[in-house]
Structures are given as C-alpha cells and as structure tokens.
Length: 142
Ligand SMILES: [Zn+2]
Image (cartoon, rainbow, N blue to C red):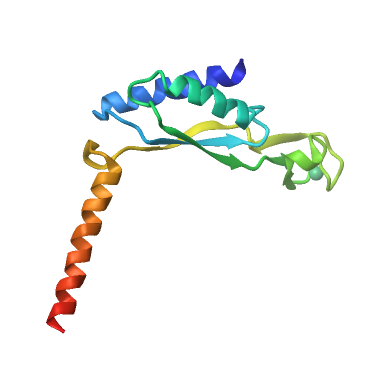
C-alpha cells in the first residue's frame, strides 16, 4: 500500500531527527499533504495508527495533516490556476503547456515534543498552579 510506505518513511525520518536531538517521545507530527499527491488521508491515518504504535518514540503520537492546494502555471500565458478544477489545460488560454507549481508534497513540517522531555500535561498544570497563586497574592494585597 502506497500510504503505508509513506508512513514508514515519515516514522523513519522522525526517528532519525529524534535521535539526533535526543528526543525520546514525540507527541505529534504535522505533515504537509498536497491536494494531488495521490495520498488518501483516511488511509494514511489508519496506517499511522498501526505503525506509530509500534515505534517507541512515536507510540500514541498524532498525525496532523495540512492540505496544500494544488496550483498549476501556464507557460503560454503565465496564468496560475487551481489544478483540481481545471486539470492540465489552462482555463485562460486553453494551452496544455502547463506544469504543477505545488500540490504534490508529502512533507514533514513540524514535530511536536513534550517540554523538557517531561509529560506535557503535567508541565502545563504546574504552570497553572503558579499563575493561580500569583493572582491570589495580588487579590490579598488589595
Ligand atoms: Zn494559459
């Protein structure tokens, strides 16, 4: 399956980056997915769930997908138009001398890791407790 191959590729890349940066856990991976990349997001998510669970670094990590709209440039008249709507024929001049500018990507854009390698939710609630006592102190002075 095409999607499974992509998922394995993403996991390998993230694990490599993670090892280089001494990251032990990854919370989420943001992927840029082109409109005409041919990747079906629901299949990709299914494969991700299955494969990420088998990785120590990525177990339970979310896959966030950002769709990149496909745009095509007409070499004859310079028009840039939405690929999904018009395909390879320029809607302005009818030329077929066109090429895809963007919309074919499957690219990792972001990797989310816990702060200090600690559990993220624990770190957040610790901050909330500090902020709360700060406000309380101000109120007591008034
Ligand atoms: Zn044109």
